[in-house]
Image (tube, one colour):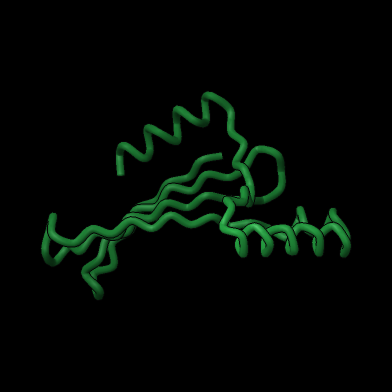
Length: 106
């Protein structure tokens, strides 16, 4: 599912726009894209934050040895400088189009 929100904080003179994309597989993972706009100086200060939130669902299903294996593999890949795919976000074509539309409205 895709959610979007916009709020203005008058005390900090900041507008925040958020788009959240949750995974369809039920694991609870989310991709958050946040845009901060300084309303005091329009079109001057804009910052984007992209964050990936994962739930403990996947690790709870693996058991202790599965979690240990995954963490050691990730540490080894970091040591030798290889890329490691942490997780995927699953979405349908309809949700992907909706996600792109909401990002363009940001």
